[in-house]
Image 1 (cartoon, rainbow, N blue to C red):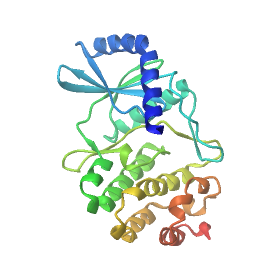
Image 2: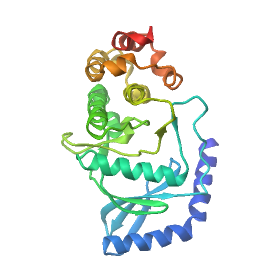
Image 3: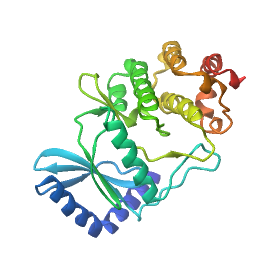
Length: 266
């Protein structure tokens, strides 16, 4: 029943957005230089998202603010927040542009007050990879953490919603891209804390995809995480991020491994 209600609310929100969606579609056609077709792509977030096609060929991805969608804000005490539509799109655009400059995100192509058009990458999410090959889930986690580390070091930003679903990989698993920069850190959460949160949140979000027999195969991933941790991260207060990590740190083996890397967890 809950799924049906969510589906019905989504349908109503899309119907209410019809006029604006068609206006933006016309603008996108002008940017692309050809008539385009929009296809919904899940739309589970705070905005509406579409694959953009010219004929049968996908050419871009569109994010469009949908003021008719009803999505709960993060609960109090979390280290991340959802800002208003204008600030959310501003943050997303900047994050995409900076990450795309080093090949770590789709490039933003066009921006309206309530929409962002990005290039299309023929990649798949690491969630899809892990579902098709569950025995490779720790490999997927390793690749996702490597992408997050590049975002931290080379772009100077954190993701704050890290998951295998927000990391894309090319067919050869040689190139990776980060998407969906909807969340921003709440004031007071420093960059060192944000970096720690990204990696541990990634593991937490992936827990349900790790087959039972592989749940204890975490040593290599924690060793990789430990290599990314610098002195500032080892000294950072963790009180602001711990409430959002209770599931991953509730696993005794993971907490012990994290404690050896982050002494302030004691």
